[in-house]
Image (cartoon, rainbow, N blue to C red):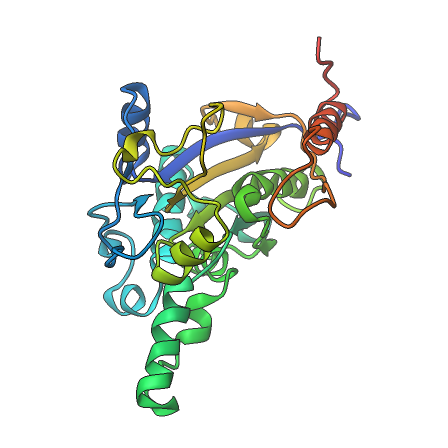
Length: 302
């Protein structure tokens, strides 16, 4: 653990945000949509859902990867990488962070993905079956790896500190924030780009989640499909997009006169060790995670 000059644990603050979501392709549009009570869930247009039990999802619309990537890179990579690169660039700009003036070895990336390039897997698997191995794209493996968004963001911005991709299913993004915070607390980095990204609205993923009976069947009313705290809830929906934050040590942020948006005080990751897709009904795992996070922060629930 790293300490500041006063002998206290390093404090970690948020100085920038970026977002690519079903409500908009940047932070401003996403926030405006949230404040207006908008819902991004709509009938799926990516493929024919006639025989699927769930035919709605939260889709990113009209995102142009060429706003952030060279044409060659955009063409060979999955949208889950496109979204992460876009959100990361937005976050850097929002933080007014001039990376050319920073030590690249003191900056890191922690951007994960719950599923990765599932679209690439499905596309290339069909190509292999139908046309043989010589037609398989040689860029398939880099394009589908869960770690590729974090690595590509690092390459794009000459980031040479710790680069990693946490994978914790639906908790991947928040795990990225927590693990990135720890990198700064431990003294491994002064700045971390953290978050998550996914683009898994594909036939196999939607079909498999449907077979798992995890998705809502309210296809006729997509805006009411996901109601997790309602007694009549019947499942979730799949969404795509990316969210990235810039985390900095408080000292680093203050030294460059950064706008401080929030502070990340504590973090905890626990397991229920109970069921492959369901938490314990008594909520004990969540209680431990929250209690441990409070303990880590030094705060009290009161």
